[in-house]
Image 1 (tube, helix red, strand yellow):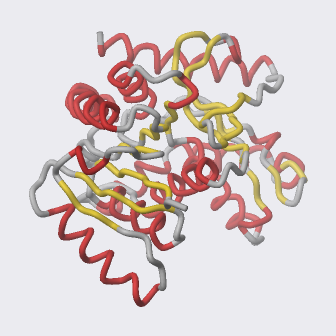
Image 2 (cartoon, rainbow, N blue to C red):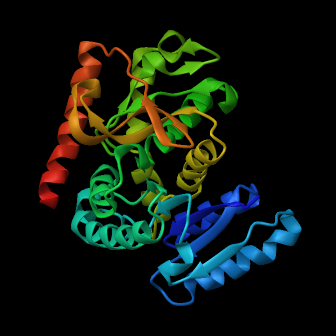
Length: 308
């Protein structure tokens, strides 16, 4: 039986760490592709040389040639410029749109049946670029943001209450950015909503820290942005798709009327299986939550309008 094949575009920190997780889990052979000559080859070789120690037989290929990516089951897009301190996600918009459009068009040509997972920021807008460049149906174009935002929320909840992260579950909707919507009444510790366990002001503080989670890391690092948690979150999506696990994970998908939104990529809970997005988990929102969701969608709509 042939092993699955995953292409990771962009051999920077997020891309290389994602490739490492996929290979070390023995999930798939990985092709690491980058425009910089030598970078993906060097990281690919380095990762391959770790294989005997961590005991996996996945092949890791570094390349500058998209022909090597042919027949991929999943293509993960991490290429683009990372956020620098003081830079908004919007500053990245035009530069990254050009990069994402070009790499997706090439990758889609070589792997017409692949599922795309977009990681490049500003995330929701880049999903629009990727969908247009690939011509893929909405089931096969997914944005990785909600898994990361939920992981951050879960981390902060666990730290606040002094409990295992394994027993925390978080629900985050909306665009990936300052307007994301952490739904605290659906965020739980061992099934109990955190709104029952914490006073409102602490809940609000955790929500705000979650929304600014990426900026907090950028401010500390000073010369780059987060990559361990983004890579782990991307891996969780890849695993659910390749193993057809039907995990319910928050992802950015093209909405067609769900949650009262049409024609926009916004983060919602979806069932992820071998076909990509298999269905959207639509839940009733309170008036306040719907208003926050709509405001988040409006922010995405503005970005997409700037793309022209």
